[in-house]
Structure formats: structure tokens, C-alpha cells
Length: 212
Image 1 (tube, rainbow, N blue to C red):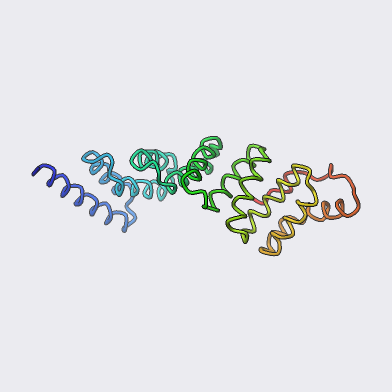
Image 2 (image 1 turned 60 degrees about the vertical axis):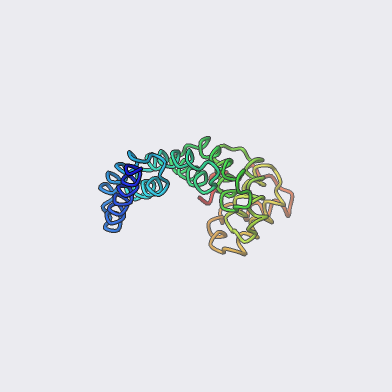
């Protein structure tokens, strides 16, 4: 019993030291201190979350993912941990892993518009246009004012040969964020004219569609 009390006290002391290191941007020292606390309690959520933050500050996303994986082991039903893990996988261009983590997050919280948008973008990166569009429309249903979701939906509509819907979605995205119209200037007018006159779309290059 005394050892348990002492261990709790030890962890609290180490977490306090780590907090001070983090406040002073001494992230490597913070991680060393947090690892000492995790040696005592490998399932300490506060320590693991701090390790994630420190590794992100040090631009070490792979190590941040490792800490998030440990966090998910402690709390597997936390949609935020799954979502953060998915986002980091996408940053590293680990698309299948990102898709898997985002889908897990959305199983837990299906009303997270941002994660639906991320999932849509991940599917787009793999040219899975139907899945991408379904994900983006799910996000739009929750947040109809997301210009980028509408813009990416326009790209999906285009790639699925649904040209009128592509124009409508693109124009709606411009009404929310006029900057997107400038980004799309190389392709949107071509599609608009083609819809109006029934011309071919073969000259529109996909790379011109991607807003980033």
C-alpha cells in the first residue's frame, strides 16, 4: 500500500517536472521525464498524451503515432485518439493506415464532420472516388459550410462523370470561399462550358483539379 502511494507521488512529481520542461520548450527532456513515469505506470494517459505533444513539437510524427497507439490500448473507445492517429498517418502518406484509423474514429463518433472530410481526402489519394464522395457527403451533411468538402466533392463528381453535379458543388464551394475559384480557374470554366454546350471533358487534367 505504501509503495502504491509512493508510486503515485513519484508519477505526479515526474509529470510536474515534464510540464515545466514543456512550458520551456525543452521537449526532449520532457520526454525523458515522461518515460520515467511510464516505467512506473505504462498506462498513464496524461503521460502518454504529453509524449504525443512533445514528439509533434519535435516533428517526430512516427513516435507520436507510437504513443497514440499506446493510448488507444488504454482507451480504445476514444474517437479523438483514433482521429489523431489517422491524421498523422495521412501526413506520412500512410494512406491505408490513415483510412483504417479514421474509420475506427467514425465508428465511435459518426458526427465528426472533420474526420469524414479527412477520410474523403484519404480515399481520393487512392483514387477511390465513390468511397471518397460518400465520406465527403457525410461530412457535408454535418457541416454544410465547409468549402473544401464541397470542392473535393466536385472533384469526385467530375471523376465519376457526374459533370453537372461537379459544377454545382464547385460553384457552391466558391460561394463559401471565393479563394477556391481562383485555385480552380484552370478547369472550372472548361467544365462549365462543356456542361452548357455538351462538349468533351477529355482535355481537363486531374492535376488541375486538386486544391491541396
